[in-house]
Length: 545
Image (cartoon, rainbow, N blue to C red; front, side, top):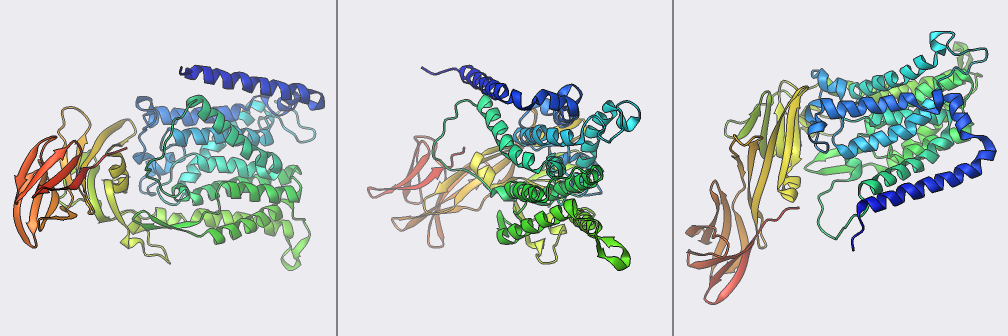
């Protein structure tokens, strides 16, 4: 008998509450967590963090239109494409690519944002200060500052992010950078805590998850991470933390700061420095990235704990000033590296007249293979020529917005068979559906075709792409068989050498056709060729996941 999911969810809640009750009962004599929270938070609640989470959810639900499809929001117009498209630049830090992306960042905000807000505090901590005596000492003003600072950091993460970044993760890294200066060990502990929170959420969402061995379409995890954007966020938090907590005189001990910065950066993949080679190929510089982590940890602890003794007496430069200045310089360098690239935009997003495409206001959606990537091609790096990078798949282009985006790769469409692409802007959207069908020839390539259809029953699907004919490897009675896609379906081409002996439409299920001296039989998803009592499989219909 199957156990209902609600039973598992109730089990998680009850055991979780019991476990927390035990530790609270045992820890109470040592110090009163509630009292500590109320000393830092109004009513012991991180209101600023909760307000920030509310802002991010509201943007996802209403601006990105996720209320109509929680797992498939409108994404493309909210990426930071270039400074010539300010909508994307200003909103990218608040937008998310999907439900998993959103939940991951919200859980990070809940965990690390609460710690950062605890370090900030709702009540003034300076000796002689008094709550409500002035605006800077007003707890409600201090609460309001927190989400405002978060939104400002989100905008900066879009302004200084390299490439079409999206997501609140830059601010989550800023929370951690801010906290690691004051509470480095707590920050490291919360790394594990955030994994626990994620595990509990997923267990509640999917109590039982069946699985089996099978194919999967994946890219390296580090190739999907905006390392530069995360680093900018982390350094923003570090600089803010060093400046604030040095002024308050509450910086953590040097060894803890060093370990906290190193452990967080390592766990969150800030060592994963990579380059895009195109065609789904990437290069990871693992050794160089790890070396950079040690440099980062030394720089952070120097800025946080260096003394005021003179480093260069002739110019009255102290060790503290030099270390903090170097930390700020690294932040500016990380941020400014994005500026020249974000000032570029694609020169031309027009589509060849021979290519079938779907128009949606200023957007053009098409399917192409091996076409030059006009977005990446505008970003030639000093050591890598990216002008040779090509795109293959469903492409979204908009010259007005500076967009040229491989929204669905050729490989992903071949894996799934159907993908929905959402384009639009603030207050409107259109959906374009891409469908692929094909036949895998035995020992040879795949013959396939792709259709595009604008959302709505009133629109007809349009043939967007036909692959070259796919020859099967077997030779039957001296003849070779190829499967060729056509506008109306698929056809068989029978040849001997360079001579075409015949053509025939692919037979239907359980039907037989004869062409070029061969008889073809289709059995469900498999196609056989027969001649002189010899029966050979030549093709199998493509299946999707």
